[in-house]
Length: 195
Image (cartoon, rainbow, N blue to C red; front, side, top):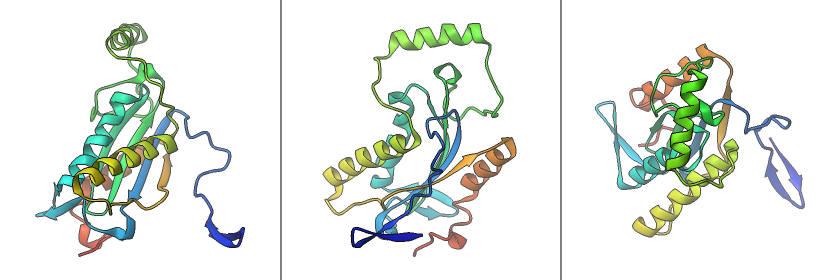
């Protein structure tokens, strides 16, 4: 829904007004290329084949875990003109390797985690990034855009904003993981589909 503000229309945010988007939890997020241009990947025999532009985006998504201490990328897919990702925001002692199966209620032994945490803190520089959902997506979009423009011309842009869904339980998490996994197979029926 949009409304008139200072003689222009602004689109109301889809974010929950009073929700803390740095809260621990799983979030399903989608963002798109401006004008839905298919520049990130191709779907060939139901498989994603990344373009050079898509490889830059994938690298930045994966890099998020390296630069933010309490972020896990649970699963993601870089489609031709959009990206789906499940992000877990949590306390630092919940860190598990990327793509490890995680349930909403899983916790590792506290003493082992403290040792793991100390080793990782000793090995890695302190990070200054905030980890709200908006900050995470903004960082991925800004850094990938700069790299894409530097290597592939200045016309690349993301659509402003992004869609998010707060994942509420294990079944919801399972359904969104399956959606991501099936997205390439269902590309011709996808609402974002472009030839």
